[in-house]
Length: 510
Image (cartoon, rainbow, N blue to C red; front, side, top):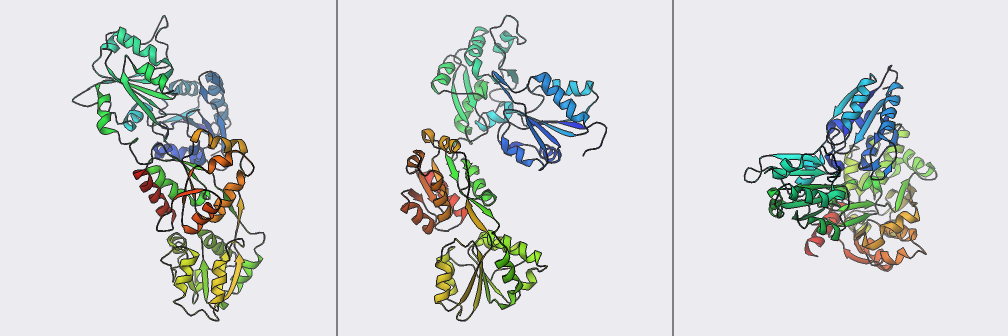
């Protein structure tokens, strides 16, 4: 995208808060941009959409804290474009709704820079919708007005004509107005709006931290103070607020308000996190282990070179499948070289990883564990059979030990390593302050050990012992219990999806 005389600037609406609400067009722009210039209210997970070589520049502004002035931001956009770069200017909500997108576009136009507007889902509409408040309804309101809440209603000259606004029968939506909530309410009452008019204030809308307060113009300021409601927020005034009691869909989900810590490696946690998030949870990902290649490929490469001697290959994780097939390809071999070898996998996710390689496993045990695999293999004559087991060397000895007692010749080869992840201790301390985490999830004994090792010798480790724990199966649960943790959820089926569903069922009851 480089090499042109002048570059291109995309003024992108990043949506109201939830990264799921970004548009397809915005996603495409972020993936191809050379530079991403982003604001304070952007969910940082959106930055993961960028190309690996993209430059990320934070220019966020919040009350009293400006990383850059608007003039400096304008100059930055122009300078990057004049270098022939493609610039994604990522703004919260929609760039043309109180987002200064119009100002930035004017500066680009005057500088002769090509630009394109990528509209976003504005918080003015999305946040009330997530609070169960339709802005228009034929029985309640046929008009809606969007007003900046950032302007001080008491200043001598105002761009807002308050009296006609107050007397309007329609819905009023104020953006960025939590700091001026009391002044806004008094100005509307002084202008003729009844003091008992319904009001909703929604903080952090569309996110798992969403909080909604309802009241009247007369009492909403005090309610917001009592609840310590903080920006960013949207204020809705009008009869449509009363519909929230019937239409509040987002905040009534079974996991809403629950912060669940996920210790599974990030590349394996996507489906698990997706299910929990769909039911309202805020998932905090702190992988306790990292999956890395082995110290040497020698053992695995030797086994692959002599594949024909094996009667069975057992895969106990998707990581084993991943690295085995990577080395198979390096050896200029493919799935055809597994012909004549029976394949067993520990569960359906590992089976899916094999299906993606064009291989159908011969055996998936009913119980997705090493114990289940041993039980299933009792149906096959293993005496004198040669078994390949690609896995980390620090895994439990149970499986190879049992196979040997059944007469098999077992070659355990290191296909990958699991190592402890590293984190800043201040970051970990903050996680557990004031009961911020409601439940911790574990998917293997090693995630239990490594997670607790992170807190060794720190007072916060004592706090973690009080938190509810969910484990993928009885082996992991046993390790967590031995370590003094309070295990409350163990699914009947030992998969990540089943664990997520079991957590949902637990919170439906408790």
